[in-house]
Image 1 (cartoon, rainbow, N blue to C red):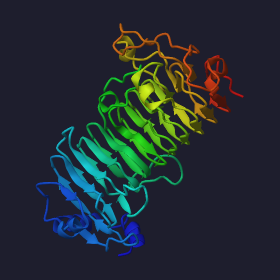
Image 2 (image 1 turned 30 degrees about the horizontal axis):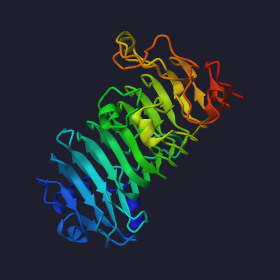
Image 3 (image 1 turned 180 degrees about the horizontal axis):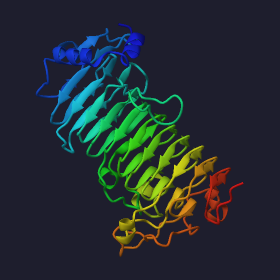
Length: 415
């Protein structure tokens, strides 16, 4: 079966056929996960349904069911691979352990060239109750396609998307990789609710978790047409990641924020996303405070573009305010601390807590549970930190233009 026919069939094969193949191709549910570390493993695993392993005709692994595995259900190390592969319509149910993963792809195309095709695809893919749904590390030219892309607007179709649900830390974690495509996934109820470090914006998992989709050290990659619902503490995050595109995604109900870009993340484009009901913030572009180890390690975030996005109804609950968990820098779109030369243009922000458009600086306060001054009142226009862009008197070179909103901080011009 050619790759084109495989991609067409992945949406139409009846469920009975998939389940029948699943039980015969892998002898039922294996006691351990599927491990591929070389070309010969594709021959010996009994998991390949078709394909020759060439780029034009990759090995097709799946449909396949792997449940209750300790560690990774599927682990592929591409260090010594010359064969291409598609992981098609996998069904994975983990044991709920933080250390378990659904799919781990490591050292795929490690030389930064697309020597092999590597994809996780299928609108019948289901990954649940693992620590992290999909992990891509030290890799390039990997495609993760849940098949649910809504061609008529942001997010995914009402039905027919690959799902990653109830992952303890989060759904998709990308680290130290490039040229990765993530699209068409429905991600729900994934992620823990750790307390972020608002002063240093430490990117470590204990402070943020994975949430929906996390990028750390990722470049030239795309997150497009995904849906993240109740993925805490952040729906989509970029740490130390540059030249990426975040587009046409939807997100609702994170504990902290729907989007954060920080820790040296620069030259990214964030466009046509629809984010709502973020507990504190919907869109956050931030630098750590001056003198922090993270700012020294990763440098400033700058020259990012947020355009054509929609922010709706951000704001903390009454109990979060009462317990001093809500930072004072609330807003629909927030530019925080010394980040510079960012452009916020053509966005629509409905009223929430704080301002629709906010420019602020975190104020440390070791008397609060979150280490910074909490709301109320909110902070506005108190920025003294600057990593560039002409300094605070020049708004650190940040530009707001053509946005639609009910309120904005008084220091923010919006031609």
